[in-house]
Image (cartoon, rainbow, N blue to C red):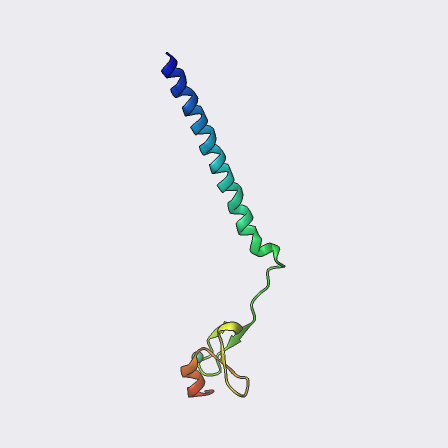
Length: 82
Ligand SMILES: [Zn+2]
């Protein structure tokens, strides 16, 4: 009977611990997901069209030539505007 009680207590403690861990993880996930949004209003990244093939790509990914024209990659930058 003593051991049964001990097992019961250990089981309850483990159940409480796993529930706390689960709620901590659950609490962390929405906060982590909201963090990028909290840094500022969601901004549309400026898109540029490749001067050669016309594909649109984020300005960060674009390759620009000396004239400031945007290209989707170095190959199209070398090929030049169409
Ligand atoms: Zn291109």
